[in-house]
Image (tube, rainbow, N blue to C red; front, side):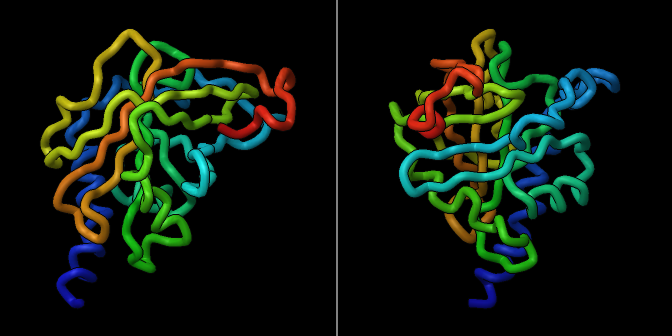
Length: 194
């Protein structure tokens, strides 16, 4: 039991270690610098299918480990790599999959991420739009294997968490591609979720 708790306590730092291997954009090119303000719109959310949950999306503005660790306590974090939903490029969204209490109320945010299968869809609500993504691949990689993050001209999202559950041994990556974009005002109530 102690070994698992110790490993879980380090999983946040391990996830941050994976993130730290990513190339950091030049100052002034962070996605938060070009994103329109959305004060009158609904807060950004990730709608996973079935019972996998709905999560707030926190737009990261830093690669500082302590800042990201704090943001992960409030939902899934969109890392500031210079890409945004609906645009060409890969958006990276990270969240916890460990039950360590110090990780906050979203410590199990991606605890069931492995249940998201190829062909399934999820929705991102942001900027007054609903972006529907379809999973095209899932894989488990070692923390140093950041080359598995797609460099693409398509609009894609990679959901990432530590794997297996309660450990920081590897990373589960779920890759998805944009298949639909609708403005929120054009949606009927039944269109709001995947």
